[in-house]
Figure 1 (spheres, one colour):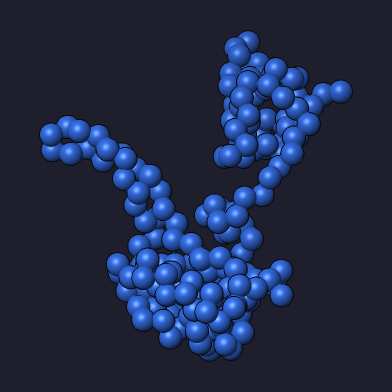
Figure 2 (cartoon, one colour):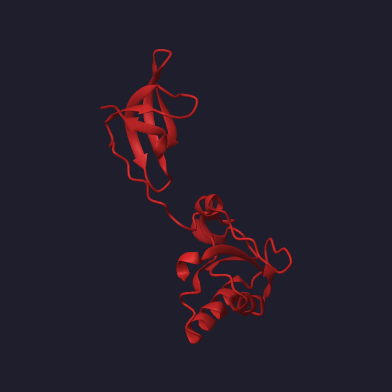
Length: 175
């Protein structure tokens, strides 16, 4: 059943995100709904704050305050369970009591799920750019950042070596 689960955005009262997440997790465990409500996330980012004394410290901050993301199979029962949690004001994108799930691109963009891309090249390899404004240019792979889905390729433009950052699937190894 959990393969039918999709990501939904739930609006909460400000500051209730953690309480909503904890309450839903307890309901899921108590009612054995692990195959219906698969994941609950509060997107966080780590930022560096500088205090008045000039001291820098790392702080986790909510990316979307007032929102919780839930991967679930939408049924009347799961809708009521989430909707009736204290602090929840409703689902985002609700049309006639039917929430609209996030698209696959939104899920990837927000970093909710990682889709691993396996590449056939490594640093130092000669590659051809197969997409974008530099299509058909060739260059050397300088750096691969799988986490961010980015590759840096050094291409020769106007007689200069220029590093260009692109997505992993925009280049292919020259055989």
